[in-house]
Image 1 (tube, rainbow, N blue to C red):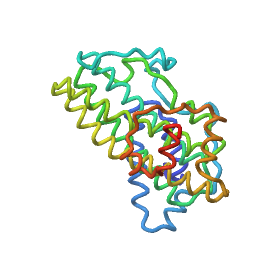
Image 2 (image 1 turned 120 degrees about the horizontal axis):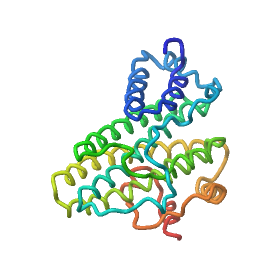
Image 3 (image 1 turned 90 degrees about the vertical axis):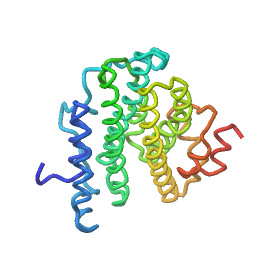
Length: 278
């Protein structure tokens, strides 16, 4: 797409419906940013102050016809001790990673006027989420299934829509709330898969190791920019988080929490205490 900014390309990539093509485009976009020779050229390529709008009728986000999207309570739970159950688990994580590509790309195109590092951070996140999707989908296909074969829910994107006009709310409630749940859930999933102890289950554990490592960094990026935005506005981060959680009906997170991963991602002890209701 010669002559277009990287933020315009992020919007175009967000609208791609095919998951594999979207993942590849996200990787190409990150490589294009890396090809900028210096900060000034990168900033010009991003044009962060330009407001953008999707083309009329463009899908936002682009997604395939399947999976069927159902309420969270209607997503069936299956045992990973069966091939179908392991595939369903893989599919659920695959769906999260596909949505995470969309969330990162949406942050890049939607919010103008942020520092260059904001766009660099979220383009990197989009590329890493694309890598996660490819790892999971390849493994899912090795079991005889494809992305779209199981129903899924749309909770991540629904929060994206709720926070589309408030970048501070977006940083508070998507990376450092919904995505941070993965830091808590992943070790529990891995422990269960180790009990399954099949080659397919243990390969899933290995992939989840990669995802957990990268997701700590992604949540840290959310924490970084939420803290920066609160400082710019003279807001107390914890007090404002409570306001945003109530305003947007964010889920109340429940223990157990992965305190070590959350600290590595930048959560303070005060924030960890808040999660426990202290």
